[in-house]
Image (tube, rainbow, N blue to C red; front, side, top):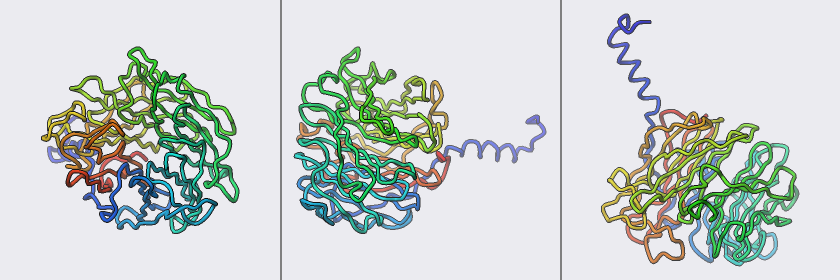
Length: 431
């Protein structure tokens, strides 16, 4: 049809609809629980629409878990309380790092670092009660993550990964049965510090399990052309040995100890992987980078935006949302540790609906929330003397309709970490 035959008002409508397809909108940020400070908030949504946010509050814990019935409801604190020396309905140790995963039956799997080890707990009633114990995996840990098997025929299987300080990264498995999600057996060495070219400590990125039952972990390595890159560990379904490879698009990445690399899988039975990481190319430019794996080859890396602490979620094959802290709106794209007081950090989001292409394309970043923090963000862990209110990450997931759900930290004053939640309520989704 010729444009000449289309009335001007109809053409305006067509163009408006086309331009609004990616015009993401978000509800107002929600205060999760200002009576309990915490940082590094993780977020999950179950198949019934319930939303769970977890966050550590500092040793000796335990870390926090909150629940909302859906994106329109307030959050309620649901524990997990205090876990004892034997499997019990409470846990007393934790608060260092926490993580939650959900299986196909909506069971919650929780892990909580206390340095000597991690507490683990499971809830079969959406967080209303918990069973747990304080010894999970290898001792002398740093930054544990947990991933539940999403397959309906394997409810109760879950995996953890942690850095055992001085040796390397270890995976452990919890098998279906009465203590599923409470006891993790048979530690499996994923990769040694020597293999990573590491002196000191560099905890792993997150852990995910796909609908084939394969579990993946992403981590930093120090053997690339400029001394840094990313590695990938794969524990195939039913296996007791991890295979490790380097991630080609990140082989020339810069120092990856500044922020966790993050991996996601989609909701189909395939080998698709989606990766995002912070690449501090110079003091004046910190890039948010993305690459995907389609089962046979990695895509070309692309720059999604600028900032720090990206997280990624995938739903339908090839469709992903990425969120991160960005000061680009205030004109700053450099080292977060050196950001001036005039740098205002927002929560930015970008989306791709062709994330499996050889070179994926993304929407321009939009602000899901504004004014999370001003000034510097220290990314040096225990080496920080201040500006650590945001911890080491924020996170994003999606609801059943593919809307983005984001948990992050707001800093109203120095040293104050308040967990916030914001949900997408309009625009293109990833379902």
